[in-house]
Image 1 (tube, rainbow, N blue to C red):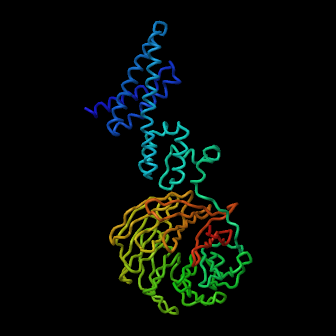
Image 2: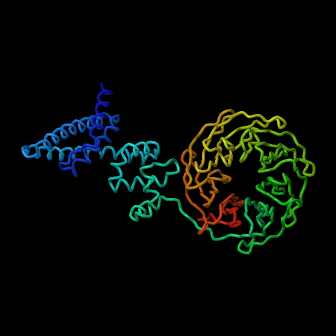
Length: 487
């Protein structure tokens, strides 16, 4: 019976959607429109449900009375008075019900229940946003938590905040802070990757076609090149650099020349060790315990090398996939290799180095560009372009489950996680660096954005110093940049 009544109410409401009376329409039309919104709240607690039902019945009676008046307006003076009185009475019911609905919205904000907040905004955004005080509070909560999902009814206001000074002034304290980058060093080449020497007096920079350079950064404003390396061939296409735990060695991945190791124990005099030229190398991750290098090949495959003898590499296995591989992350303790590719995330068991096998696959819309693991290896963070960040639970051996997503203003390309796992730095193409607080994996918060005043380059990767208070950026055409995180 209840379901039938609700169906009739919905049908009746739809029939009158565009047939509101012209009589006292400034007062009546908003009240009639609200009827459709209130019906959506019919399943709330019994007291509200009863109020909504009676409100709807009053609306139907007033609509019938209005129709009678409009059919013979000259003979219905008493009916006009009755109709106006009915609208005033309906206004009281409207105020009472909206107070209840507003209380639901405030409750969702106070409880930080973004899911419920989203559902309520979808149901009754017209009512909420008509009240300027409620709109301010809703927008303040939204701009702080928008990374958890866009709400169309609020996003229009979010994207045009600058055109509403009063609203902007109210919510600005909840917006991510923007810090302009002022310290940069450029050698005229495009910086793809930056790492620091063990003593942090030098930066090792991958410059793509201009290969590899060591840069003295002790006085960053007066930085200068102190060494370089190339493959003595037809040129470079250096796209990735990774380092050993000791900082003594760098692992270079080059699309033209393959894979090699540099001894950088003396930053001003890098020494090349053995090289493996049979692959078009895109990126490398190194296993300290087994002295093994896992190399992404441009063809969408992996090569696994024994690099325990830095002067004599040995091929252990090749692993071919059907999809291009963008990045890999290693959990040495569990012998798991996490692959970010064009389809999503794959997990390989590499306990037997000569025979890697896939044990799990998680499809993700638009795939993943980059993957990093939390310090305890229980959470994986994936950069997924325009889809932002995916947070995944990887604590179980044969299962990967979503925890949350975090929208970023622009394309999420490269990720860097702090040592304590509480700060995530996102390199965003054509923008800058987003600092995301990850203390609560279910609710990542965008705290700050670091960017050039006139962005003419893309932030491609980052590295933190040992104290975790200074960030260095490979900023494409702008070279390398330095940011102090001390506040």
